[in-house]
Image (cartoon, rainbow, N blue to C red; front, side):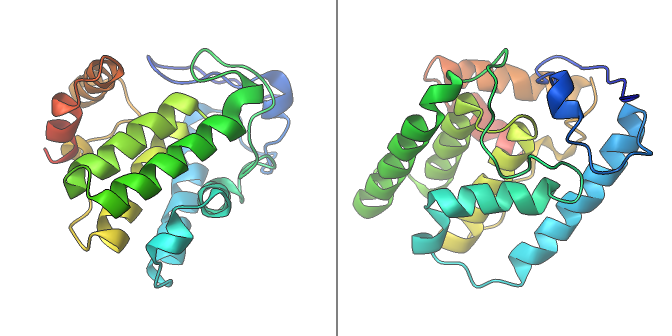
Length: 198
C-alpha cells in the first residue's frame, strides 16, 4: 500500500497489515489521514451528544470498543477491535482483555466508594486505559475522550481542555502532555491533572 507515515514522539507505529485496514484508498500522507480521522472523531462526538449515557453503560467493555469504532470506523477496518500485535507501548496483546476488565472493575469500585475526586477518577482511568493500549492506533485520543465522557456523563462536570493545543503535532503542548503521562507512570498524577485542565 502507498501509505507512508511518519511518527512523532509517543505515537504508536502501525504494522503493514494494520495499514492495509485503511478504508480510504486515496489517502497517501499523514496530513490526509489526520483530516479523515478528525472528521470521523467529530462524527463520534455528535454520536455521543445524541445519547443520554449512564455509568452502567459507560463502564463496560462494549462501550469502550464502540466508542473506538465510532471514532475510527469510517477510516480503519480494525476500529473497535483489540489489537492483535504487540507495540512499543502497552501490555502484551494476550493480556488486553484481562487488564481492561481489571480497570473497569477498579472504576466500578472508585465510583461506588467515591475513592477519588471526579477529575482524578477520570484521569486515573484515562492513564490506565492508554497504558493498556487496547487498539492498533488512536489510544491517546480514545482515552482522552473516555475521560471526557466520564467527567461529563457520570459527574456532570465540564470536559477537560487537554492543554488547549494540538496534541497530534510535535510542540510544547505535546511535550507537556507526554511528560505528564510519564509522571503518572510513576504514580504522580498531579501533572496530568493540571495538564488536563490547562
